[in-house]
Image (tube, rainbow, N blue to C red; front, top):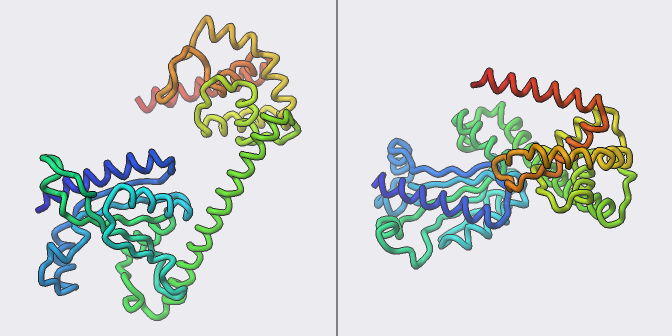
Length: 315
């Protein structure tokens, strides 16, 4: 049966990756694998199964590790859209506050009706389990598994209080990460509204305000990644820029020179970027600053040389 369950895991993983990406949910990871023989036999013995292949519903298992608690419901919608859900167990919301551990959500599913043909006939009726967790839930599960504590009865009495405290701490941390994500999203939206639509530039320099400024100045260019924007924020702050108004003035002062450089020596597109022979928003801002701020230009030369050296060392 192992080959069939390996094929099922591949199909489930492929479907989850596509569905989650289409839903616009950023996650940490997706993994899928069949149960090992030792684990299967141990469960059969522990559960006293009389018909193991029918009763054991996690011979093929997938795990989705999310960033935030709010993503759990978004992934749930993806799972319910992709597969036939036979049962769902929410070990987070449905458990008592004193329940041991910091759990996850479990779904037992099959492929949806209509999957037939050589690719599906041998796996269409097989059950599989999907676990959905946050990063902190996954950390708890992995560490407690390593310590071989599957339930409260297996823990030394002197350690029970610490285990309950730790699971509660992780729950609070997950809630705080959720609050930070919500605040960050609200702050970015507010900054974009004020800077792009109202023209207000009296903002401190950070990744969100610079992203809004670049959108205002270079809406027709590729946005690039927020990692690039964060690096630009770090660079300009190290050069003494403290407000968007001064930064914007210097970017605009060097813009003609930057466009000339772009025309004579078009940049190569990075993976994932549109190859239109133009700088991204971050790229044109950096090039503009290079032409008006000698200290910034020197810093970028040193940074480029350092990165080139590291690339050579890694090569």
